[in-house]
Amino acid sequence: MAQEIVFAADAVQPTPETPANGAAEKKRRSAAKIAWAAGRYLLLTVIAAFFLFPFFVMICLSILPNKDILARVLFPTSGKLYLGAYRAVVSGASSNFMKGLGNTLIVATVLTVGIPFVSALCAYGFAKMQFVGKEIVFGIVLSTMMIPAVISMVPLYFLYAKFHFTNTLYPMFVPSLFGGGATNIFLMRQFMRGIPNDMIKAAQLDGASSFLIFLRMVIPLCMPIMLYVGVMSFMGAWNDFLTPFTYLSDTSSKWATLAFTMYIDYGAGSRVLANQTMAAGVLMTLPCIILFFVFQRYLIEGVAITGMKD
Image (cartoon, rainbow, N blue to C red; front, side):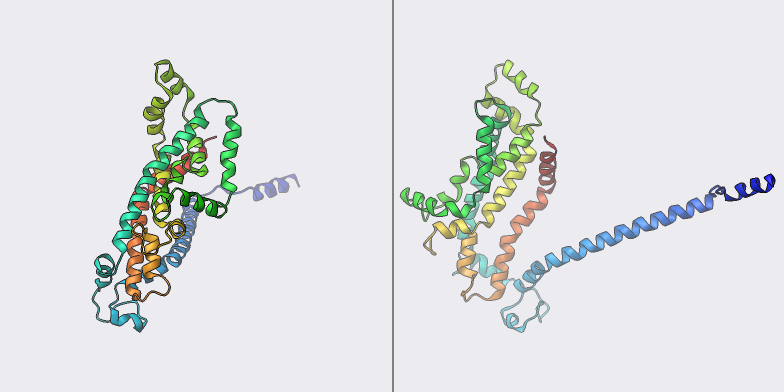
């Protein structure tokens, strides 16, 4: 009886895995990983195609000849690319695209350079300097993020009218140069908190002033987040429509920005053909796309590093 029990115990013990079984298991796991990765990328491709389809249609319509616009086709019936719509947008006698482009570049350049600098300057005070009520003031600054911009639109309009700023470019960049916005100050402060205080104290012992430390030490170390803020400031200025629509009461103003010009020349009620409208949309979208792909690494790095600060 004891011998039968021993035999039964030996029967239930697992047999050692042979090399063939181990290789087959590895192949199954590898195939499962490949299938999972393929399914994930397929899903991402479908989602990307869904969001990119309107841009594809916009590009296709922009290269259609005038005779094909009403034919409801996506590709020229002649089989040749038609670039006349782009020429009409850029150099047409009735087109204000280049004027709007110049005004927008002025505003975008000022904000791209100015907002990172002034927001970093404010953040440096909150992150590395000591003064009475610092946390209270910082809390007040953050509380402004909860105030909708539309609430201050009417008071600001009357204020700018008093200063004769309406129908000029000043309302589009002057407010942003006073601090750069609570969001940018918060991002800069979070990034600067990761800079060791010993470096700043050592520079102070060497006789460097606070502003010199900010210029020569803090700004180079904060370049990733400053690039992020600069790129986002450029894209915000490039796509801004509400500000010029509010403060440029004259639709033929010489200071009309690109978004406002697009609304005037190619918006609802305009008699411009659809291929010219789509060509203008393509030209306005290209700078933001190029800017994103050029600075993609810096944008991701700036956000990722900022999120790790505590």
